[in-house]
Image (cartoon, rainbow, N blue to C red; front, side):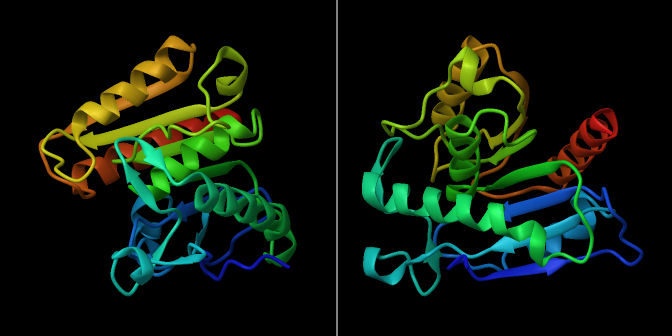
Length: 218
């Protein structure tokens, strides 16, 4: 069984084939942090919000949880990052059997550390993630993460970032996007006049992107 705790939001009348939206929280948050976004991003989707495995307090991140220890720049600590990637893979593999319906296309995304984790997982597992979402994260500098023609194939990416972000600077987002573009990724880029957060405009843009993508996949 997966070691990740999680919450779910399942719409009334959900049927087989409903999109599955898995949202990963940011550093120092928990599994409840993004749950309220569910009806705003994909009202017909099954939404699952897992909790990161590492206690954040040990690294100075407060009482919440973290996907990895941040080393600066675009570098996650290799070991904690690898552990979380492995546990996320186990979680996704087991998730289908815990749901009341058989889900349809997977949308894997998150905010900050969660966005970084989501893009990295998609690149590490080519073809396994049809839709990957990065909200104010970066492209991880890790030996197992690379944007190439092979690793981006089969995944559509949404990358939103605040131009005034002081936690993960906009330039880091631009750097990661450029790597995806150079690899030939199908990438939607959205910029917002905000800091490190998720604005209503970004939520609306992401909702429209999910609806177009899932509709096309269906």
